[in-house]
Length: 455
Ligand code: SF4
Ligand code: SF4
Image (cartoon, rainbow, N blue to C red; front, side, top):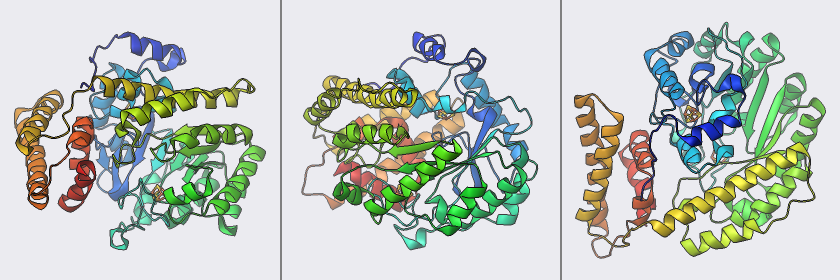
């Protein structure tokens, strides 16, 4: 099975994608590294929330200006101008390869002015305070999984010093969590934005559980754009997915946010994580979004594999595809409805591409651990050869990734000595994702995450 297509810089898929974009944007596949910055937990800065491979800098060590004009940022800009997506842009690369243009996240960074000295967008994911433990989430994103995993609070004064001079120029400030309405520092940042740059978009991705007088007061003074996570309209299923969120309350809060956004003419969205458990809710959710004048967006779930659509048995994938395909959208013709239907069709395309992969893949269910290791090591070698030109770095990374895999495997094999291990999920996983797992987890959490691939 092959996950990567050729790196051809002039291939038709780029041309076809570009036809959907304004001429002025076509100079680069993606403008994220030149027009936006994503500040993650611990202050690490990335080009966007989908590319966690390239750490452009750290706001505790570098100024925003240094990061924007630093070598890593400039190199990534150059690569993206040349349509090279091998520097951590797997999400966009896969959507492009599937010709699923609606899922290419790079389009979020089109139609922005050229501000040389400062970014137009700042995205924040600096705290993981959350009141939920959703089934597809982890302790990295939600403090509720393990209270001891609560991230250290970033120093407010430091953040504000970094933002000085940028607040006024921002066009959009985006806030993720955790749950943004539970994160103290965001309130301080919002107050500053409202007082210095009241027209700036403040985009919040919320789980919809928090709506109190403080939030309402703030929203009445700011230019808020809201996206609410709703993965099912079936109450029981919703509450099985969004653990600690109550369906009736979230829907009531969504309606408040919707009315606010419609009155203020701002963005109201519904964000859905399609998984094996809720794939049959997707048509209903799309109708619901259209009828509520909301945009719908779908977030591809890669982890855990037991929930993810890419790992669903072939017969179930086909059943879901045929079921979704049956939908009739003829009664809708507004631009928002058509946009939502396009998003819906992007899920169909994704399902179809996974069905095609499953039909052509040759993955034996049961392998010896030695054969499995050999296959994974070959993939690691090839991935490192594509990504590290410096020989020393290439060797170090290969050793690090292989040691990590071997350690987990040894532990796992000794624990499961009496049973055969099914490696098919991990062999089906794009090697980029396995590398990302190794890079972003410590030994303990890595073992726990790999276990979910192997069980
Ligand atoms: S191409 Fe996609 S993954 Fe890469 S920086 Fe742009 S938005 Fe992020
Ligand atoms: S609301 Fe978001 S951050 Fe919180 S547990 Fe759910 S997915 Fe994770």
